[in-house]
Length: 452
Image (tube, helix red, strand yellow):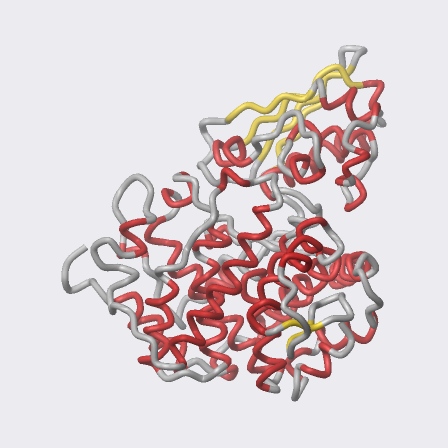
């Protein structure tokens, strides 16, 4: 980096963010944002009843406030509600991902702050969508110079990059001027945290809650006049420099904001299975092989899975003892896909982890690294050998539900319904889904929150 480069990132982002209007955003991008928010709200409703959601709610009990807890007949002060809803949104590992954000989960650190601040400000759905797009583009912009070294170095991008998305989304919704947005970004640069080492524990979803809350705090501090160094992102010992992993930050990789839309070109991938995304291609391949060849648990002699080094790094639990660990276990997930013919929310109930049919297959599943795959590839090959000696193999380049092969509207709506049915308290499922589908038409987002 040169002295001329320092401060460039915050200035470019703030200029783009403050000048952005819904009219500037391609129609398809607005629709993708609507789908992402619908999906994130759905998984948050279900996550409120999961361990991490319940723990976050119990730990933050400062009394009622002005902000809705999604799926719960309760309110909390804004900052607490943002943390609780953010953690609940990631509690099931069912929320969306984006390769351009270092395989992070881009929506979950933004949706909780957006809905909370929109509730306080009586913001329109159109303004929420605009702020979402601003935050998403920010996360992808900041990921490029340090990817994949940042993720390889052990950082969880959902939290470390998501905090900037949350800060920008809130700053945009509050219509902060350019100088205040630059300071919000600089403040956020002192807040990234989240270790991959905690994958498979309650702390992983807490990463999303802390990113949501910290980003919101950064924007609110900036709104009140807090100052940050202009080069806190791209200067010496700034965010890029400190979080780069091996190698040097490459500012030449910064995209042209407002010309190249990451939301359109890189996209958001919606999860079909509630577990680590690095397993989805393998789950899909194993399911198709089992279905095509009529394979059951008792038929399996060996299952060999090859995937990327990124998958191997993330999937640390070959022999899981809890549902959270099972979400990061290739052997368990492949076994569930074959023995149960599905990988659904119930597959991660703690008492089901040691089901005998699943256990019998799990012991026969191995994961090895394909060195020809890029570090962060989601591709996988599954080879099943039966007890009768038959061999069946399938390569799956991408998981289902990717940006270029998205879940249908019916599939997305069904996922929302299944998730909403798991909420701790009653939800107007059909009414909420209709409002989320037409979010851009809502003059006040409080109408939606009354149904959640």
